[in-house]
Amino acid sequence: MTSRIERNKKKIICIGTSTGGPRALQAVLTQLPKGLNASIVIVQHMPPKFTKSLADRLNTICEIDVKEAEDGETLKEGTAYIAPGGRHMTIVQTAARERVKILDSPPVNGHRPSVDVLFNSIHNLANFDKIAVIMTGMGADGAAGLVELKKDNNVFSIAESEESSIVFGMPNAAIATSKVDAIVKLNDIADSILNYMKKGT
Image (cartoon, rainbow, N blue to C red; front, side):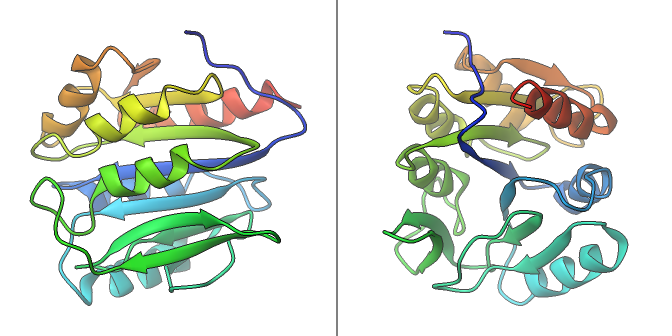
């Protein structure tokens, strides 16, 4: 089913990546403009402590704000939240705003944080246009979550192309679900996101 974007909905971009992810995240996030009218939530497979230094480094070179996610914080537009290494990240909807919820539940697909856990929580958000991106990485984390996400009409999904992926495992698994709307080279992913968002302006 074709995805569609609606003007009156808030927007969220969810990204999953693993091997080669720090480079890929830098390529995408540095192309996103200050004042972006979307929140960004990211799972990068990493052990504890490393995600904080990754977020801090990206924050110094990006126009948007980049930080390691903290339990209970409210999502803000123009900010990217990276799941803390070794812990799952979910997004929950409260009466006021959407908040980060960090979990120490068992690994999923052998990973904690897991892309599937994040994507499944995004599926539960009401009144959002959603963009899902799966980039370079080993394994299939994110594929099952993408299938769940795509049960909604308002989801645009992107997989990184084999040509630019360091490891094509995760994007390939996503593509195999037939739920990917666009297969895009790394350096074109940000443009693909922004062009889709412009449809609702």
